[in-house]
Image (cartoon, rainbow, N blue to C red):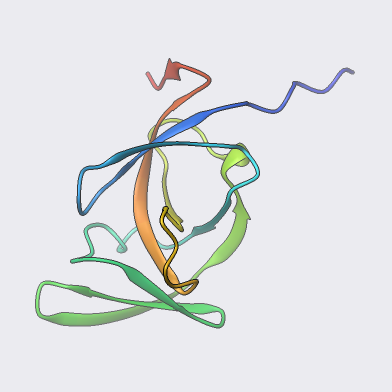
Length: 104
């Protein structure tokens, strides 16, 4: 069975700052738990864990690495956004569209 081609452009929106980015499918992402819902700023990677603040509470969780090309519209993943001043700074983003096709 033929394999579907990899998407070329994926649009994501930064949940904290509401900025929109167009990124490629090879971009590294991390999938976290559902309770990583609305961090106040960047999420910081600490080995297999991430740390963030939600309100006044510090939080930690385990994450799993992947690439943006494996995501679908509506999914929330952690992405390193440009400009990358710090490699351990990841932002929670919602995937808005894949190759111009939005989620349903």
